[in-house]
Length: 386
Image 1 (cartoon, rainbow, N blue to C red):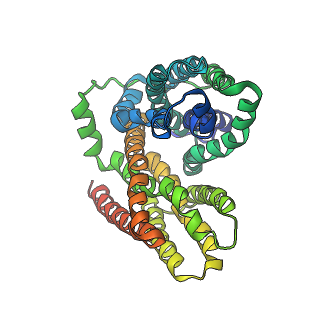
Image 2: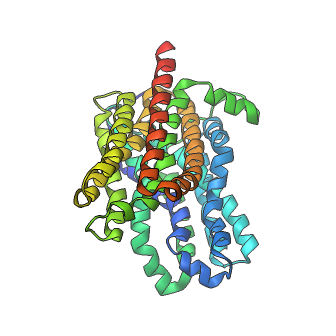
């Protein structure tokens, strides 16, 4: 693949913004959960299905979406997802019956998956070789930045116009983004490779260490990240307010993500991943040893280490895969394993916390990070052999 001499930052920012609104497909429900409960009289576990339904597509169709973006071209896949996602959000704004809402959210998950697979491939294509690690670190920040902005904006929108108005604006924003992408972003030619079957698609991606490595590195991060954000703050807040600590932890992780992009210009992504796993273990164990007054500050530093992984994992996609097709498929695998990790992590950590409190959270984190380190050493050996 030819590499650009300079980066088209206007297109990079536009594609990153599509990621912000894709992440808002989760945030537009989870961040205003009480407003949803006021409309749909359902138990909270049932209402939670409205949030989790979007992630179902990623678990089952991540690899297939990567194949699709490579075969049909990432630009038409992105445009179709933006237009369809906008229509689905507008349909949701009508506040349909609850079963219909769940169905719309399941379909919305397909559009979310298509966006997060296609957009970063286009970002790589318009970036210089030197800037690609930073561009991928920017992309890796989309979920955290979107949730931070949505937490500020959504309550205001709901307070002014209600839940339906907020969802309608989200859909209209998707259509506006589709118009900008159509006007500004040039297409990448589709692949002529034949479409494999469902099983063959997974076998092709997961047997290739170059396409698997970014997803494998990211998987262990997703197992711990949301779970620790959910459960850790009350144990380590010390003399600081728990809500303050809970709000700072994801921000320090974003700092680590951008740091990883800068480091990836100079160091192997495998080195960055290993450093992240090791320093995360050191930081988590330290939480058991330090006095209470020092715990929140060590927790902030530990989340910087945790945040290195998304930046390094996304930077690994163009570093290890030189064609847009291979990058799309690597993105699909990363989305798939990321959704599996996020879905599985919280129940695992809830059980560990119930068994041992902070010590339980530390123990399960150490086990997962050790597994992550072992898997990276293994996949690094596979890459070196080819």
